[in-house]
Amino acid sequence: MRSKLILAVAMMLVAFGAAAQENTINTFSPYSMYGIGDLSSASNTAFVGMGGASIGFRNGAYEFAGDTRLNLSNPASLSGLGMRTFIFDVGTVGTNVYLKQRVAGEMLKTSFNSFNINNITAAFSIAGRLGFAFNVSPYSNVGYRIHTDDTSYLADLGVVRYFYNGAGDINEAKAALGWAPFRKLSIGVELNYLWGNIDRTYEAVILNYTGSGEYGEISSRIGSTANTNEKVARMFGAFGVQYSPIENSKGTRLTLGATYRLGGKLNSTVTDFIPSNNIYADTIRFNQYKSATYIPQTIGVGVNFHRPKWAVAADWVHQDWASKNTYAGSSDVRYVNTNTFKLGGQFTPNRLDIRGRFSSFFNRITYKVGGRYGTNYLQYGGKPVREKAVTLGLDIPFRAVNVSTLNVGFEYGQRGSLDGGMIRENYFKVSVGVMLFGRDFDYWFEKYKYN
Picture 1 (tube, rainbow, N blue to C red):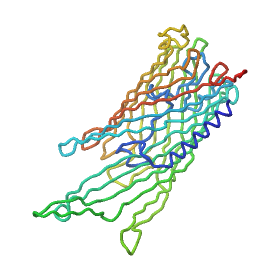
Picture 2 (picture 1 turned 120 degrees about the vertical axis):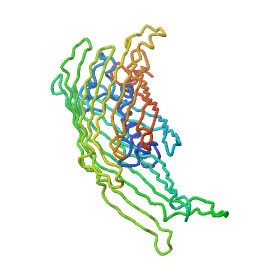
Picture 3 (picture 1 turned 30 degrees about the horizontal axis):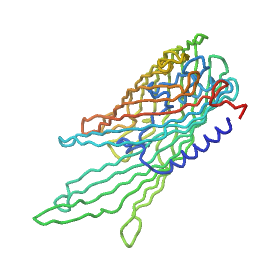
């Protein structure tokens, strides 16, 4: 059974990679126009409802109700998977984005919907205190369609409209190991491979205009469409540690966690291309160079306090974008360091309620609530872009004595504001994931003895 599941995971990873080659719009945000786009806040669906707080979360034995979820934020947690354990997790997310901007006293509005794969993960125990996980998930997404009008040419040409379009993404493949050299102390290491393809285009068009009682129609390009393509392929690494000063057989556990992700130059290949409509030349510009963008060093710390029926968690994540990154494309845009705070809690009335009553089903569900607050890694016109969200979530077991779950997360958030002509982005996300947990007692992974 395990070999079949590994083959299924491999096939899904190939499908994920093939889908990533097509530059579809997986997000819709004007704030993805610069840098490497809109950074994904995604973790496994099971943590969405807790605001993403998971650095201190530790995988544990079945008696720690709810601790069977996979923690991709800290590789050290994998040491607690337990012998003869296999977990397969896949998640999806649907997003509705609603944008507003105040221009010359008028409120402009638009909206967009998207649906994406959030993660594909497989994890299993290698030895008693050694666990392994492989995961593929989005790292950042680019998706925007913006136009602005310039009326300074009205007397001579008409209104010149500038179009800015972008689509693409950067994905991350992660291989992680977690090991516990001592019962209460775990360490972890992971390799992160980023790959992706981002297209950005720029075009200027003269709109139709009316003047001097006569109608003149002009709908021609000024020059041609300019295209910038960025291809990413780069390896990074990360480390994690967890320590549980409190851990007892009654289900009480306090875990402190920390992570460090190495930064470095992205070294993506950027191609600038402007074709020509001139019969004497087919190219105005063709440049190819390595991107100067640096992926930041990232430090995270977290705490998780767990009881059989409830748990609370908090994370702080710092990313150093400003020390090595500059943005030459616009004087109004610059990189800034970010600090993100995450907080969440969960409650399970009675995970082992198997009385068969209708109310027993609701007793076995894990209910979650959380929030997140921080800033975007890019600042516009000297103004920070604040980001905040509130979350809810449910873990719904498939059967009474089954650890496999259907995970549902809801997130409502806001980015930016209406001050100074900025754009306010409100969004609503619904995440749905399935976690199949295989162990001696789990029917998903039982081998039938009789046909």
